[in-house]
Length: 139
Image (cartoon, rainbow, N blue to C red; front, top):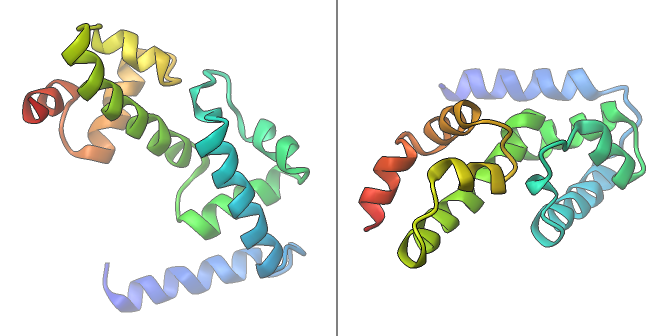
């Protein structure tokens, strides 16, 4: 993406959320709370995590929760959650395969994915390699 395209997309995001009533300072505060929830409470491990759950925990509307994620992380809700899930999976794939070789599917479920296909798609989208290739490269 060229700088001109990036600037245009950034302007479109500002325009998109201009009248939502969510100030930049409050958005940043919510971002920090969300990061805390994801890092400390590991919300992403919940198979049934939805945007509504995040909104409720932050005490805001679903729309504002989506705005916080879009503006601060440049990701959709699902890509945001999956980025945490894939990091968790990478850690488990490295450590768990050394001590007890669990199946990749087991690790996918433990990390919050509902099925193997979703896990493989998200893993490849984020890392550009398959889980099996990741294990081989980490060995």
